[in-house]
Image (cartoon, helix red, strand yellow):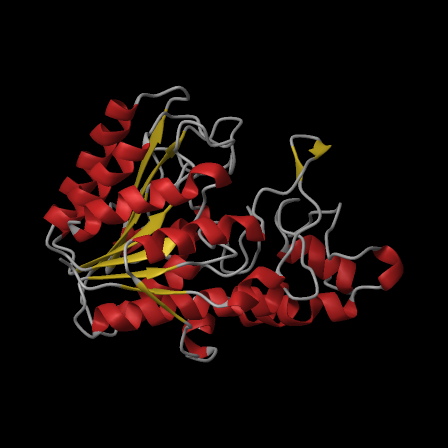
Length: 339
């Protein structure tokens, strides 16, 4: 059985979004604290130790994210006028030609969409979430075969200088870049329902980190503007960015065809370690699902990753069917840990 430890801190649940603007309407937020108890219960049921993360400071985070963006995230809520509302959230999105004068202009630049409002404790939660990813990466660097960061808020949509898609700091990218201190080649496998445009952008021109995403066709589906097959990287990174978009309504068998393609690419890359951006939103009953992965399918995916023989640093991303998160996480880790 693989050794594994999970990381989480209760301060991550101080991020409680109140707003979610999507497809022209305000909707009930889906990335909420209620996601966490089922994941913790799954770990407890598998006798996996849950520890609080170690503080690695800002250097591993600023290695991935723009410092102006980080200063904005840390300070935005304090600077937001109270009579504008309880959360930092813009109805203006302007990057080119933005003079960056005032908090509303900064928000227009640094928040990419309507799904990532900043509350009074968002920075603390996002910072601690990144520390969970780094603590799991530490365990992998120390020789463990598996580690799990229960990251909330999630991260794979966070760009170097913009929040979006429920994400503020790109936990998987932070962990992957950090692991490069120990390993020559890192593969980031992202089978979340949505394309992780943030990870893609961060490693776009690098050949030491391969990014592979298996996701729903982004045509009229978040993130809409990225995740197509022709996006392959640039410069020395060309060919080290692979996207496998799935038609909406795809079967579990089709999903696993793409998983096998991804694992073949990882073998050809000769990756030393895998960072898994794990989303449970491919589950067939998830409100975000456009494919039909079952609980048993997550166990199969865990087994396939174990069969690679590579260390696996698991970073939690999506999964919004709270009623089935515990069983899905239990199945996945049973497969990965050989239980």
